[in-house]
Image (cartoon, rainbow, N blue to C red; front, side):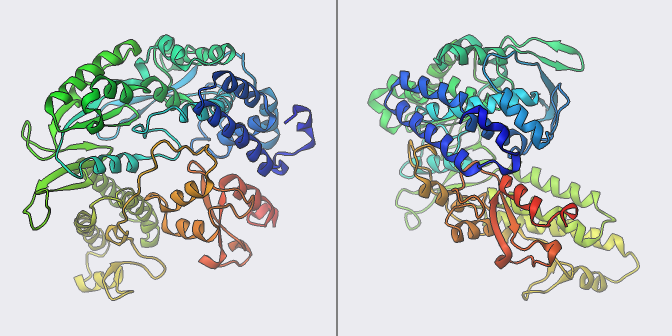
Length: 550
């Protein structure tokens, strides 16, 4: 871990397996110290991690190779770095440097006419924040409440929905469905820094980032409140700011705390209980608890409802693109007299259909094979996200809606041909049923994606506890994991075929051709292996995959 060793390596020859193991050993010790409440040991280990050469290398790799948004530039204009510049960046990472303002861009908010501000940091600040996150995340993952699921490694929207489903197994409940108003932009920075309770050097560095300001078309603006949405550590800081909400609610009503369910996903919060008065008290307590942090509930997105009985004209609620609702049934169907259904929300379904319509309209003259290459990832990705709930009937209706758009698309291309000729050209029967297909490919159907029940993550487990088998198994069973990736995960026992390390929940996975297609390798399962993205980059640079290396 000595920086003096740095010049002995080139970026592509760095011992990533040893680097990853050294960093994880420190993070595991951090997790244990935080679980024991040993603040002195936590701060000592964090200082050690922040100075470690291995941790700095890993932080730089995460923002230059493993990050999906790695090609976006901040005010420094740097969108990517060559290997030699990455090593220079590793050497320059240290606390105490001045933070540069973020470049503000505005992106559309899904399902709304509003726009969301996004702060794009400089490459140096991104790498330093990734390093700080390596040190802070193990400490706080050991502290976070079990009902918090957003922006946390190893937890997802499906875990939050499964927690709600388990809560509704035995009885209908009243629900407080609440959203916070501009959570990232309104957090009280002083209160947040006090809550972090970290050592002085790290607190000063985080304060510099919080107060660095933003630059947009109108010039420089100061940031006296909030944390940059788009920063590497911003989601973690948001979770720190909202930590303690679940504990507070259960302490305020101790006689009924066992029956109170609190599920929070980032700035969205759901509270469930059988007593309406308890839910109303919870809303009042939440409003009071949020005030010192500078936050408040958004009235237009906060409502009190019931999962079975209609209040204000409707029952149930929507969360994270899902609709949660209970329906009355006879005793022959359920002893409780109701059934709970979680399915894709109407808004999410309409948004998906509109996306497919736009793709179809924008590819009116495209070849059929190229057209399907655009549609298939959208169809399969949406189907994967909703595959853990009651979606089968909806998938069939969506497929019918897609067919209704594909038929005019095909007829328009051949106005002088008969309906039978058009159907024969664009629809085939590869497995006894008519599907939209070409000679080499076919359009995927929503209803072909298997529905599988998602298993909720265990209470307070964290990815830093060293239980690799548990976390790699969960990765293979996650609804968002493609089936061929899940097969490879099982075959490789959750390990990368190049470095031999276990895949983590936040790892970016890529399927590699063992014998590159450029050298005659076939695109089939026997020629596939699953790699980390950075391992894939290294292999492709030396195995003849690129023309420059052949």
